[in-house]
Amino acid sequence: MKKKAAAKKSPATADKKAMVVMCTGERPMHEVAHDLKSAGFEVDGVLDAIRQVTGSAEPGLKGKLEGIRGVHKVHDAGPDVQIPSPDSPVQ
Image (tube, rainbow, N blue to C red; front, top):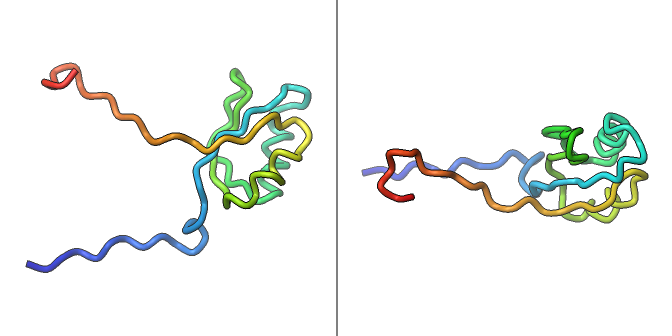
């Protein structure tokens, strides 16, 4: 039986880590998201209600991202969580 080759990450995403940016609220979220993009952050979502931006970037950019006006803190995103279905034997 042949083994399937593991999917390779593209060079653009190979070293990026998922991150969550917590914002201060002193600037409109779309402005902060624009500045994050300009600094190399790949924005996945802008969560206005909780003042957070999700996305990914190279770990070395974390300090640069935290220096953007309107950014409070940049956190590494935690692992994905999957909830079993209601009929699953594990609850």
